[in-house]
Image 1 (cartoon, one colour):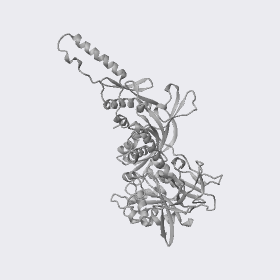
Image 2 (cartoon, rainbow, N blue to C red):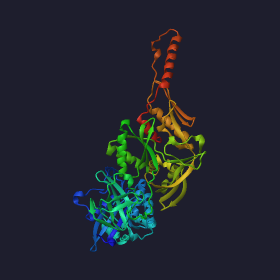
Image 3 (cartoon, one colour):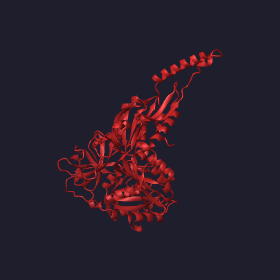
Image 4 (cartoon, rainbow, N blue to C red):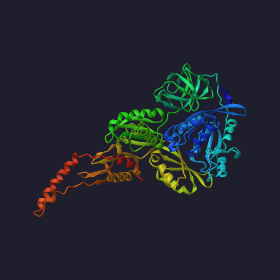
Length: 601
């Protein structure tokens, strides 16, 4: 067993694409933790999707051994995702560490995500080691970016380690800094067991594998343990440390990181951020900072073919084992049949879940318009909160007292040339500017309070467009605020289509209704009868388009003769059309649902 003072626990924090995973690869190579045979790029990203997109979706932990000045040290690296949608995972990984490598790309300088993850690390009193990555690039600006880092951290320029994860420059200096600057873990090995769960993965053969960091005490194989937040108790069938493959051990001591297998088959029983304690310890204290992951964006997921519903349920359950932040409940819709209402952390999360369903489970699904969770209050009972995840849950407008929607604080860092464009985009999206700081003469940090609903749709893409790709974006929730919201319903042939209704702000309702009607008119095929498409708020119609009927020329056989003969045939046709319109129903093609998502294109 390693003495506690020779253990170092650290994580890597950075903005997307600043080279976290590549740096982790180089550290593993340098410490000899990976044999030639196992070596590959982005070694810790074990999902195909992570490799293709070049993003980390799950956190990964791995243990390295390194001999420095004749003493062997154990280094536990916890690799974290960089995308804003996965910030809860990052916060738990940071809580399990004593130090962090802050990686900044020498060509792109400091971005919004770098700053928000840095604040998380500072709140947890982590020792920060700044690393200037990609110094070998022709477009790198090492001196300028070093100055930015010095301004941000208040450190000396000598403390910033220049490195290139691709070519291996500076890796030795990074390892030296990890050992010299990051403090050894503090903890009392004699105290009762207390360990923090920072991640869990699902193994189809062995159940849920829980990754934890022991804060106090020690955990041994076969021990009777309990999870504090859920209150369930289990036996530790296997404990061990995480090399590239798992290494079973008899005992894991305070300060170390390891994995635990208890044969749990239901991933919902393991919550990231929970505390593991001894089952006999009745007054075990939880490590603070635990919270349930709160989904931000909701969307319906339906199978294309209704017969696949059960299969979709099974696939979603398996996905949930691997990704605890996915929440879903069954729902049904008149237009789409049976499906699920799912909660996601953000739009990227939604996209990834959809793609994983298609790849890993071969399920083709329809996703409805994403929306957020609102709180409605009725006049009859103003203090009671009605949670509205679905536009159809909104109570009747006549009895409504107020509706509240979630707001976020958005931080955008961009070049000073694009400030005007970014501001007008945010104000369009009902944002209120709260702060504007010039980090350098070239780069500005803007803060806005905005409704979450406005950034759900296409905000990120449009932000990249107006700033020519030079804006980085980060957000965190700041609670609910009252807002004027209405439900826009779409009626086809005077029948409401529930899958197309949307909750929108009063000011945008008319525009949205008009756009949806126009779009549907182009997409729905013509029938034998006129189809009116209407957008309505309550009983009031705010926009209308008509799909003209296909007509058979019934007067073709009349040549000459009295006009009444023609009129008689046309009247007969008109009656038929009227009857048809009463009984006819309109099929909505799949593209129509997708198109509503892309109204601004």
